[in-house]
Length: 523
Image (cartoon, rainbow, N blue to C red; front, side, top):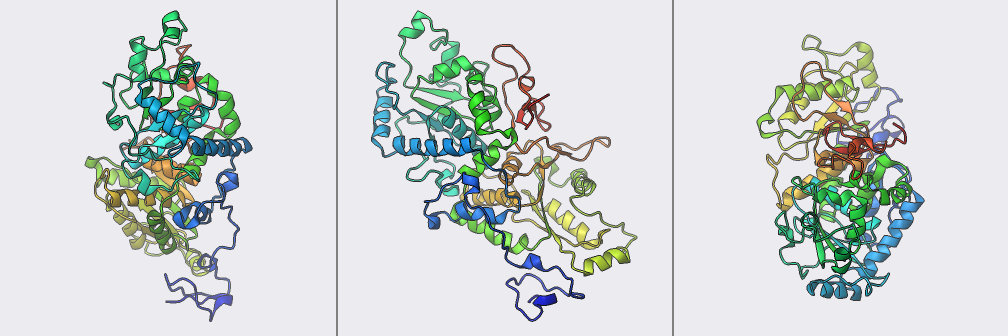
């Protein structure tokens, strides 16, 4: 069907989604027209021209799919990114420097301090594991650490990392080559002899500068274990003295599935540089995520087709991310929480009681004058919450007379690791949530963290567990930054609460033991 309204009557619409009956000539049909706004495809200098656009459509198109233009990066961040891109090209796979570093690694020794030149290349290998949201946050964290320490970032290509994301650096790759000599590095764990925390515990490595420490050459590599079961010795990674010690080791292999960035903000040696890079402390992942993570063409097709069919025409786009445990697949209590949150916070209009069949005449007239529908995209492994919300807004009128359209791109029933089709849909749905105007997420979910950061959206957060009758159904988060779930609890030197050391690192609402960046300079 076609749309004919007002001054456009007699002209064929570019969209075939719905037919609309118009009253008078004041109908607002701008939502059916292509936007004329000029979008900054380079995101304020965050991105650079020069990539092959056909190989990665999303890189330069993504800005056109968000009404929220996002934060502008600092000039220092833009300059630092350009320098780091040069480092990745100079020292990355396929270069003489990389070949020399690999041979050094095979020898079992790090370059001696006397032999290492200022131009010597150092490397950080990031292991990819667990869910997609975890892998994205871990890669972003590793990239920031690599940028702070002038290391080349190489990402473990397993778990579809090369299939889901375009290459972020022009003229080189960030994927670790298959011939990497540390066979079995993906299995490094607590038992690994080269684990940094173990070497510190056994005093194989000491930062005190004693004679034994000075005489011992640095190891060829160190394994940084920052998984959920990290020991207190592993957490020394976030201490100044240990960062100085790590700087002498040419190769680091890092395992984390967390967003460790708030911990980096507690390292004294990094604080001045981080303040210059990110004067808005609540936009770190917002910038890193939009710089690094561009959907490959297949995933981008999933995003754009859904967007044009289900979101482009909407007056307001609302994203709701529902993450529940297996025993909560169909929970009336959680459904009530979602409904109360979205209606109490004004994100969705209230619906009338069963006894009231139609909205007041004034509201109905307002709807007929062209109040555009709102579109809600729900992401969940199950379809039950979507079906209930859709049914509620179909079977009952809203108080305002507004029409609300619900949709859910997929319902995969269970999370599947390493399944390409599943991972593609998950990545597309994270991205779709980031294109909404307002966002509701589930507490502690990395899926939601990624969406809110990419979209520059401070979400309303649903509690992970059912709430009692006195607690609010949701609360606005303190920032759009992800939470570092397994953060160090105390400062390295003063044994103080890590959430009370600097005003811009606070404990998370959704994970009280975790740490989160906020844009505050005072307590």
